[in-house]
Image (cartoon, rainbow, N blue to C red; front, side):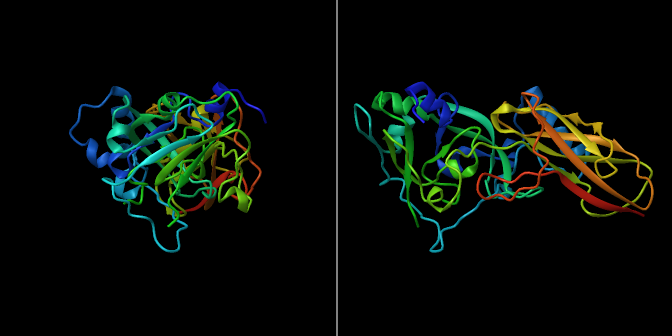
Length: 318
């Protein structure tokens, strides 16, 4: 598909919010936020953790932030003092930048959820953090993107660290497969480009599908006349408009309460009241994105473009 330069950046998720971030040092978890004066929306969302034990934190602690590695020989450990990233290809001015060169661009912070394309329905390969980095669009602007450019390819070490030190890409609205780590070259290309995973059948678009998950309760036995259900919902940059839960395996639904999102790029925490009835109940959750589109109910595996389906949890009433 032919794209002009503005569309290229938007399609790549790089126009305004796409960041080059400096590995683990640029990822701020809940444990680093302790004691800070937080914005009202952040403080309100964090209260969910206290109100409902078992819920994930609005901001994932760094030690719990999901990591996925397919490197059989181990992840690379690059020397930040010797590291360089080159900007090449269909540009007016090829660049070679060290970490100080990257830091010379204006720094921005953003709350953003990252989800692995291999995440299954109800899976835990999804986390939320505050990231610090520089706009990739600013770097590309300095290089001067050609009118012929159609895609941006990132070349990385093949072999933390574990979060991509010294530099990784953070692409809003795209699965982790499109958020490469250990970046050593940014190549602007005139035609199509198929990376390592795309050559093996995975999507070359990587747009996040709307998902929702039940975190409380977990499968097992619950007791008492009153319970609260809770979990997360995420739809990439589209945001979450609404969440509904069912206590009868999807025959009837009720609206859940949404906590304030930390940003337009982060997940939301949801909760709902529930009065257990009978001996066994199957709970279910579904979400709508910011455009009003419902999440896909059809069960599909992660390959090739991300899983879909309604998450359900069966509990016994004890």
